Amino acid sequence: MAEVWFRAHHSDFRRALGMVMGAVDFGSTIPILGHVMFSVADDVLVLRASNLDLQVDAECEVFESVGHASFCLPGDRLKALSSSLPESGEIIFGSGRFNDQVSIRSGKANLSIPFLPAQDFPCIGTGDGADWYDVDGNELSRGISNASFAFNKRDDRAYLAGMCFHASKIGKHEVLTLVATDGISLARIHCPAIPEPRLPERRYSYPHVIVPPRAVDSLRKMFDGALRGCSLATSDALIMARRDGVTMISKLIDGTYPGYEGVISPTRTQFVEAATVELTAAVRRVNIVIDDQKHDAMRVVVTSSGIQLDLVGETGGIAVEEVACEVSAPIDFQVGINGAQLLKLLSSIGTDRVRIYFTDAATPIVIVPVGIETDIFVLQVMRFRSVPGREAQ
Image (cartoon, rainbow, N blue to C red; front, side, top):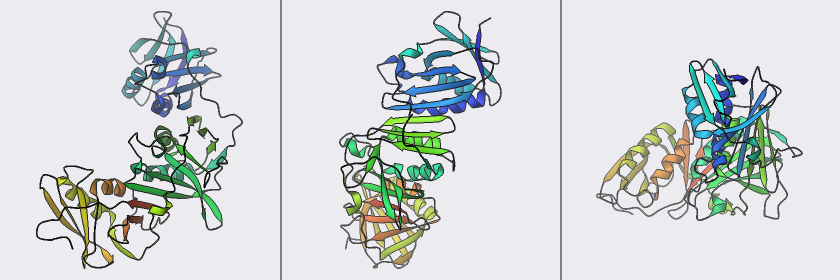
């Protein structure tokens, strides 16, 4: 019979493992980065994963632990095991069949998996001594979710690959502001529930940090649904987050975020207002004829009762649909935009209605959720192909 090191409930273990899996580097040529480190002391199991840029620690309560145990197990095998565990029950860790193996038992299953020594696992930091401050976790998670569609997924500009966190003055107070852009679309989300953010002093036009995408996703996952018990800290090189026994530490992207304010048109007099669900469904149907997402532009034409969406694909496919809107813009005004990006943008809007502001055919459009005017979305304009029967004005 294998010596038992500790036991844990399936639900607790699955939750902790799910928190750290985003930092496992499955494609690394350094074998230990594809592993999860286990460290047990005082009836608390700490799981750690790291890709050398992002580190996530998650605590899990255990029982019947005997002393201290530490080892590293392959992340892919742990992920497969976790997904097969039932909601109730226990998972038991102990000595394996051979000296370099760990035994894992759950129900009638008994596995013996080779491990790597924990002392070889990297550590970015602990967060001790950092300038922590409390945040509304759910507000931050909401802001991240709404802005993430605009991430730059190309490698050409590293400073655009992350999300910019900076402070903006709203009324008498500064609030945390999140910005993401890929050069075609832009999202700027103010977080009024997170006032006076503590950011490092910088030499730039405004103090800011640029958080890498995997760290942004870990923050969203950590803080989702949490109103209390969440805290952040930043330094010149790191961002750190804590909640309920989970600690995330990530390196920042070294760079200066571009001054994006100039692409947000201050003119907000010409607009159409539509039901978000109806507009989203119409955009999805018109997008069916897209052949090239980068070059096939959707035309938006203002009519007396709303807007007409039309698109001509590269191979000649045609789609036309009208959407009923409240109109406060010149009739027959038209502009071309990227329909695929518009669909992603609309999926980030949780309000019932949305306003689209127009300036002219050469100025990016501004989209604002009705009821959450602190969220601003911008889409660049594009040249479009004319639909037969309705020539461009």
